[in-house]
Image 1: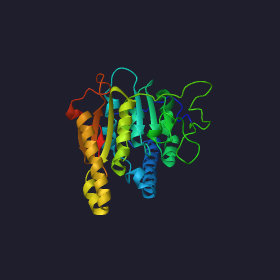
Image 2: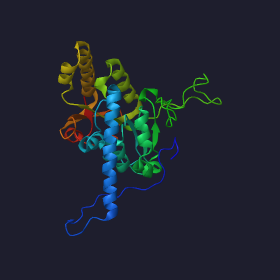
Image 3: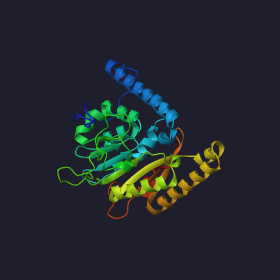
Image 4: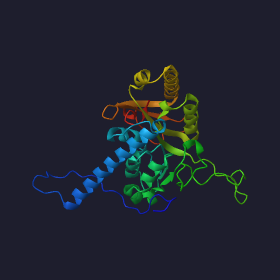
Length: 302
């Protein structure tokens, strides 16, 4: 697989089917091998996630990948959709738990752009077989940079500094051969895995404003955060960190009041999380047509 093309080959994963009881029919050897490979991959992802959390918790924000129910909640805008191609941006993909869900539910002709600043996580995504199988038909791209660096970050970085090779090194303002710098792409859906409560309030405000600019009118955003973080901060941090954390929560609450469609608590996650679904102003309902109670199955908040 060659960077910057993350994936090749249009092979859609088979839909799960309800099988008869397996008591009378032994599981085929190839199925056992495939299941063991999936379990081994999951275990490897867990260790990678934990090691990166210990190395840089502020940017990782968790000690384990998101569980199945939280993953499904975050991907809802891509599963209830209009009858047209979708453009989806995932920010902070980690080891790819949500990314793999997205490639299963998106259709040929849709576009998926994944932004992951951690080069070790990005390398994991580049070598993921499931992403490779469907990458070409989904126009899958991986950018190893911060979302704040869009649109200047494009294909995956070849170095280990977490940035793409698209910086304006020649000082021409991003112009090449007289052409203007590429403008930011607009998206129908943004799925954010950023640990907002680890950031400064001004940084969170910039990212949220950026999400609104990147979404098409009526586009939808999901994000998540863990329950009980305020109490944990009081026990483990000083007054300054507690004050910063509360300021971020107030900012997010106002954002959710202005744009929120609903939320859902996902108890079966480590740790439990709250998922939020929000919609950018303008336009019609683009990705989902859910009522607030349905929308609870979508995003997550701090």
